[in-house]
Amino acid sequence: SQQREMQRLMDLETRIDPHSGLLNAASFEQSLQAACDSGAHFTLALVLLRSLRDLVASMGSEVHTLLAEEQGARVTALLESGDVACRMPGGELRLLLINGDEAAHQQRLQALRQSLLNAYPLIGEDTVADCRLMALHSAATGNVAEEMLRRLDAGIASAPLTRVAGPG
Image (cartoon, rainbow, N blue to C red; front, side):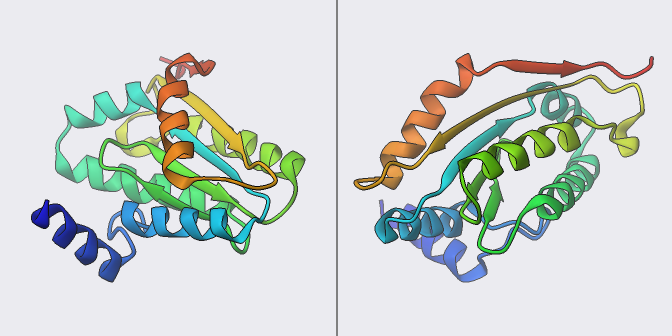
């Protein structure tokens, strides 16, 4: 629709989510399309932190903003030059890892999983966090951004769940 296209254009103008400091969805998808068009090797990943998202939703918008800022900082700390990430409205994180090979990408994703599962003092040390992470590695040619995003969304429910309970 025309309204959706106007929103996409506005998102592209702002490029950065003001809370997380990560790219917004439209800018991320533009970066993914450029990676697909370039034929470069990359890894596309989706990270879900459902229990944390549900808990924060019950605590109000200030805590939601603080969580977005904290997650953005944790993600940014693990990105390398050329890599990009975005935080989607539902709290899921998308990452596009370009720098390095597949093994390096997997290593960074595991470090990210651990970082995201660490305690969030702003909402309590006894917080239970869970994480689902799914990654797709690009093919040599013929990568289609929309198809890769669909495959990620469809496969995330069956991705292994890592759960960490706080000391309480």
